[in-house]
Length: 471
Image (cartoon, rainbow, N blue to C red; front, side, top):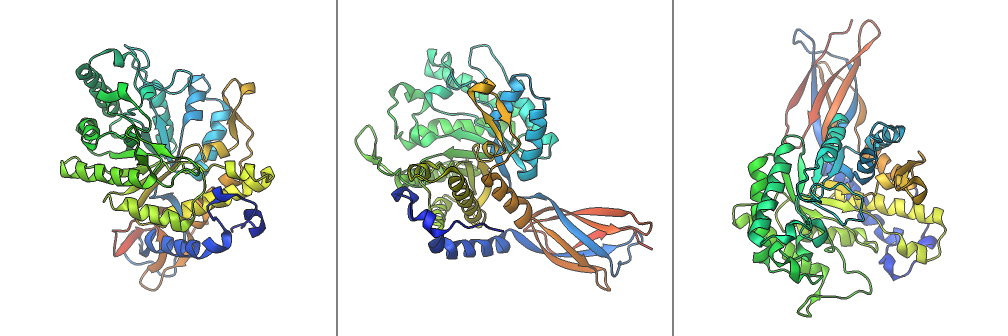
């Protein structure tokens, strides 16, 4: 299964490796694997009956999972680029789709109100009078057509490049009118299609809309000022789709960047812990105001790597906010490996192991409810953009070690495949991962049939499978 990196290679790293030694972290990883089987699986009792309702004894059932209940996803910048350049039906997209769905079950579809002009990305209203949502609609339809949970990112991003320049020409009260229209129209159009939204992106480092002209990064905005726009954005979104999951998403809260000291405008030190505490206070305040968020989003752009013990401590701290935790934009930097002079193949193997370990610890934590990469899988599938391709993703169809390690975890190690035989009462028992499954069995004429069932943490008692009586 795992292909561990030998300890000598890790010893070549500098302090940015943060003590990431395979021998030292092994006990924590073993404990995480045990927790996964405890919290992500359930005991299942299947009762097979024929068309007449009588139990089927001695029936061999091949159980295979079809879908995980836990969302595993990545963002769709590359896919959006191909579509916007008229290549939505190309072989590149066909291969991209196959590789993506072989591994993941959720898709982070992108629609920025605006973005930095030199970024040729998916923008909604870069110029006044525009209403460009066709590309976002295509991303959402692509996700749903391929059985993926559709997530939307972001509804509102309070950073200067995320707000159209034309909006900034108006007084604050008018800006709010435009923002409300953006929120309501976006969410209403995709009601029932987009299941998860990053409703506000990066509020803890940015000014409130009314203070945009005073931006000083890191901008330690007053909590009441943050609530002054987060609360109405949340309410507008919920008005249009009360059934969606709304996540507030931010970065820079796991660990402090090595060798970097951040100061607010008043000279005070800005640390990851300080930002976590402010973020948790935001969630508590929203709950007290009757406008709770559904998830706390951790981008997890950590730069230097963190150990499982550090990761668990961070998750425990975030969990104090009292809402489910979502990894929203994870990617793993390898800058410290490159500086250590390691060859590219070794770097690729070490990165694959680190990513596998990190998602293992995440999946093992009871507060974590979703995990989305930020190019961490799409960038590892063999699809890359470069100058020779005119900025469009090319397809080498050669996935990296990181992709293969993640795919094996998600679709093999954390996936139910088991054969059981019913007893005299038509009952068979097994332990299965939460999600949708199929029970397949032989027919008298030599063919096979199947019947579906779903495993959830809440579902107890026997699950009845109505089968054709063989023989």
